[in-house]
Image (cartoon, rainbow, N blue to C red; front, side):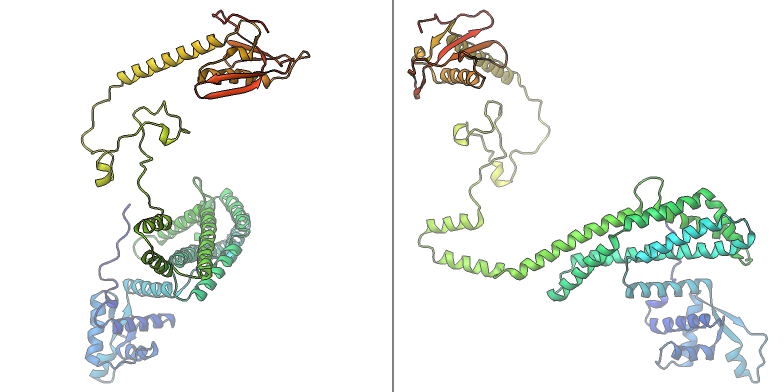
Length: 512
């Protein structure tokens, strides 16, 4: 549904060259309405201009043209006073014609007043308004229990008060939220005043958030009680108590009921919607986020006051250090220390097949990675063009299968070489490959981690359950020495028995 359009030229009187005179005339008619005067003559308009604070001299022909222009814009209407008595023709001309605000003029004047009031107002989060909404809802729930037609007038006035409080809550909340967002963005020149305003705002928000959930639950419960009685019943009884005057054209009750339903839907959205989060809960979240944001800004202001120097002075000191650097190499070291900008390592690039390289491996121990020439010129690792063909990974799969087969064969060979077939001194292994020694020590470590038996024997199984290792401490305290291409290993000369639980070739057992 498209939003309604404002009639063309409705507020044009405020933007013309004589907008001050037109606005003063509108305020003169607005004051007359406050005094219950429905129309003004030419002389009365002139008198009221001074009453509203317009003291600029205005000639008769100029005021006549202004009244005519407002009439042309359909903001004023001209009627004749047939009940008056006039002594002269001049008196007839000045007093016969009377001017009054049209419906469009009343709307335009109300719009200007609302805009000026909004510009000069500051929003507020008032817990008293929430309490008033809860009280009015509770009162409506009690009034609906009484079927006496005389109660309808009280239902009407209470409903009007409830809608007024809801409008105040929405308008004040929107205005305060706007001021709050501007407060968090604007950095004032006077840091002391700025700091005080933010601190006071944080205290104000904290006070509002306190017990907000309790008030929201109270309003939701009272709203549910009224809805159980029937919202349509409430509006019908309020319409009966409104005593709307008869009007030409459409029935005023239709528009009145439509406005009441819209107001009630807004109330439900704020406190008890059928779906989604109530807006009062959203207001709670906004207030809490604003408290956190304001406290962060206050911390930054405090830290800026504590700084003994500014960024500009820091850079000046750094420039003096550069100027006094003994050599160019020292200047480069100073640059790297101050800004941390070293040569690119391209840590985001990876190998075509990164699986063989563990994440803990040093860069010095891994193969180099090709760096695209486009990375320096355009910041991209490759040229973006049409979608390439699907990569053929058959060769990569074959390479992985071959590597896995080779590694498995090496592992099987190592296990088979370590199998003793019976108890064997550790020193009898003599010289062996480094990886084989690593696997042998892994088996001995697993056995040493187990609890010993009464005779000192320790027994352990590998994780796949294929190999069993039995270990006895040396009774004579001998020391074993094992050699690998990378060095020598010394340790207790344990009695070791390593065997496959499945059939496999083994070393011949030798004497203990």
